[in-house]
Image (spheres, rainbow, N blue to C red):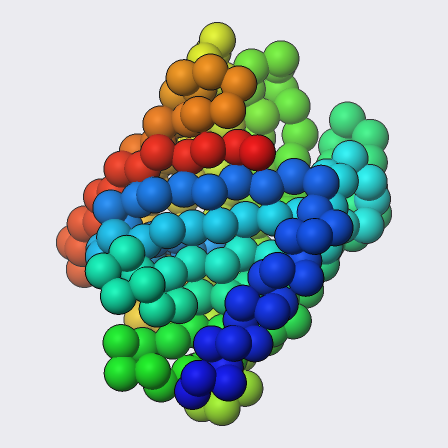
Length: 210
């Protein structure tokens, strides 16, 4: 297990050396591409990526528990923007994503994603996100289909999502509210409500953009 943790740090350090964008966030919860899977325990979330303006990008997300400073999630992914006009479409591969429990049990996940967006106005963008994948060392499989709107007004941002998740036949809604304090710091609040089982997740965080 020590070897895995060391590998996580090596992968993260190697990726950030050539990164052109990055952020560090302290949150009362975690982050997940699947809103219903968002962690409720405090985490530090680190992101780094190559130039997002290019058609082909690479990125890494490293998330660790604040209390024990042990890794929660490590995701390595690459994305290619194959439609880059007013309407944008990006395909991505998670190669792979690693998750670690408090007992140091590690699972890996290989995923494929499709992200599409179209600006209705200067402030409002309509989008969709599809994620499909399976675990490499368990029989876990998942498909997420979501629609979203992103509204920006001055320093405020509102990302509203409605989604369907194949695991448990779940449907839910999620909201992310952000406020740009200045050019580097951003305050965030996230809430998720799963309509199927009534589960509620709420987090707040402070993000620093490098």
